[in-house]
Image 1 (spheres, helix red, strand yellow):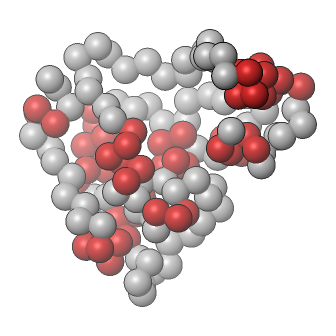
Image 2 (cartoon, rainbow, N blue to C red; image 1 turned 90 degrees about the vertical axis):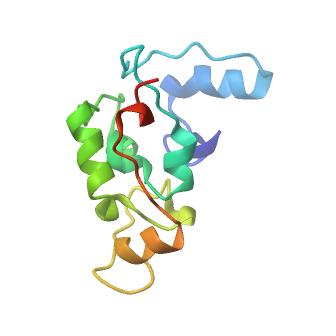
Length: 129
C-alpha cells in the first residue's frame, strides 16, 4: 500500500485501493498525466538515483484529489537533467514529502549526485526511442 498505508488511510475515497490491495485484484487507475507515445520514461531509474516523488508529483499528501503539478514537458525534464542537484535526496527519503536538502554536507544535492552516481543524459535517445 506504500504511501496509502500512512496517508489518508481511513479515507472512503481510497476504499478501491484498499480493496484491490487486500484482494489482489488489479486496480483501474485514472491517469493524471499521459506522456506522448514517443516518450520513454522509467520511474525506477529516477527513484533509484534519488529523485524524490515530490519533485514531479508535488505534495500529493496534501491533495484531496491528485492533480498534475508540473508540466512534465521536454523543457521541464531537460532542466532537471541539466541541474539535478535540487531534486536529489537520500534513497531512504524518496517518498518523504517534507524532506529538505541541506545547503551543504553529506546529504546535499552535489554530494548525493556523486554518491549515487547520477549522470543524467540529455541526448535525444534517452527519452525518444
